[in-house]
Length: 99
Image (cartoon, rainbow, N blue to C red; front, side, top):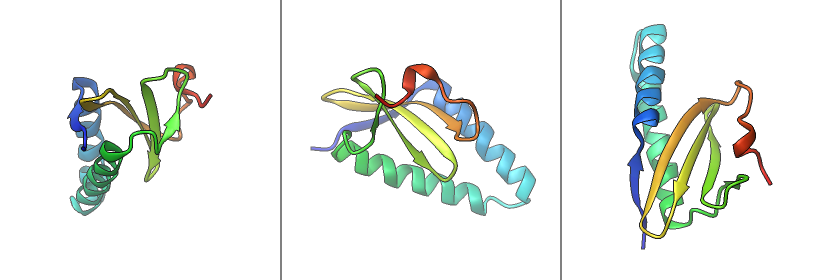
């Protein structure tokens, strides 16, 4: 059974800023639509098997890389919550480093 996918307030704001940046820079929403499509496809896969991602220092928090971004999420038996969407070029957060 797949988990319910939710976005935290922080991740929603971050995603909106990322999409707005690429829309304005490229003069088109083509890249943004592709980014959202890939994100949702990857999250659907992880909703089936959340452990098919990279572990962090916390047992319930994991992350994966997609198109130059690091997506950090928390999961339990009912839902998968996207916590943060960060550029992979930024300095990694110590709490979410691989074990």
